[in-house]
Length: 622
Image 1 (tube, rainbow, N blue to C red):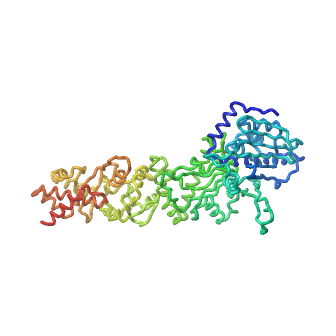
Image 2: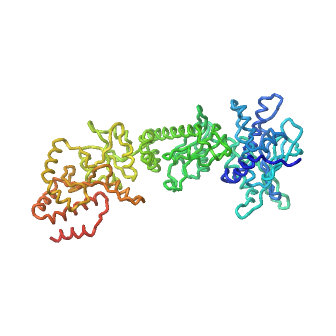
Image 3: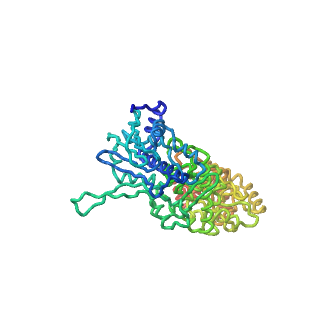
């Protein structure tokens, strides 16, 4: 028969698919096996609807054969086959999809699943093959035909001979070159690996011949058929039928984690969109989790065929630690299974999964606190960052999943638990920030709140205070930093007396401030018990935020509005009053020493340690 040319638009699509659409060569086998599964589905459906057709489902299979000498790979199915016209239409015109039309005709029949786009994914085989032969015999026909093409000069369809119904696709591999080694696709283990990765859950047996070694070396090696794929996905089984050991084994094999997951979430969802999912919450963070190299995403399957290894769109960033997969027939695919349309179905699945993860975490927090705390140790930072990075838009989703250390409970509590423990009449949620729980516990500003029996949350992670600011409030209670100059627990009478005393020493503070132009204000305070001084801040930037922001590689020099507060009941207050009257030069020295002491207490650096040590030595020597 005369060679036919591909249509111009088809030739352009073919070139695009081979060179651009598919990101790796492995998927050619996935596409051909999916097409073979489609062909068997069609014949099986025919057996269900046509009483004249007598077939046993157990007889269906897909065979994959390798011939190293001939440099060929063959994919053989005993499905419905194709006539001469179907070969010409399906393979001669790219994107002519018999499977797609078949699905439209039978979309109400839930027993049949068509996963392929025959005539589209088929052409991915030209990434590895310099020639493709498709030998096919349609069910009910006595004639067989062979489609042959090199992908460039067109194709031809000839009458041929074939005993059994079905299709046999034979790829003649390209020659090796400097960049590509096509011989790898002639290795049994390589092909088995591709099948296990992409087509493990195709519901028909995928069979390869395997050599069986013999003790007698003179005898020719025997071959036997071996089924490569699992066929029944674990996520399509009832949860009650799957053991903990099976879940753990699957998790370890698929996600390369040799520690048990903290939680397994097995779901089957019906409704606007149907899907199965199998999710795992790890018990620890991967070594690269908090680096830019970490890739989030769930495996995405379409009817048991792997479409994407990591579909990032299925997980929000704050749940990026979740591993697992989603399998759905309802996802829209365009010309390549690797190129998902950003459609409504995908968004619905993602929203449903997000809700499921949130509910599961809340249940663990409620019913298994120790497990939740282990999860929070590993991924709590990401949950907090989810609030901060979204400027509070994710507050409703995440706020009840947060844990903070409590000065009263001496353990981590939720914000809901803090609210339930609040003193009568308390209007704010108090917190303090620092490098560690022990250091925060010793801060002068914290001492008075503890003495008055107020619970203080200790924020130790660098993102904590930014998270609190993004939250703004919880159940109508605003957050207040105990180190903020505006945070006040004095009774009106105490406050009035303190304001009166500060007014009285206003001139002294002006002289002291001349020695410390970097501070916003200096004043007496009654919030300190035994400590001589402390630092507080005005405005939204705290001292801890200043430290963190100045370690970031932005080049910014962020400054908090610092207030030096002096314990009005401490002997140092009397000393300062005497120096103001008798030796203003010494007053300046004392002021700088007190300020630097306060910085040390806060865990901050001292800009001029030499000046400080010299001043202390001068005072000690007098």
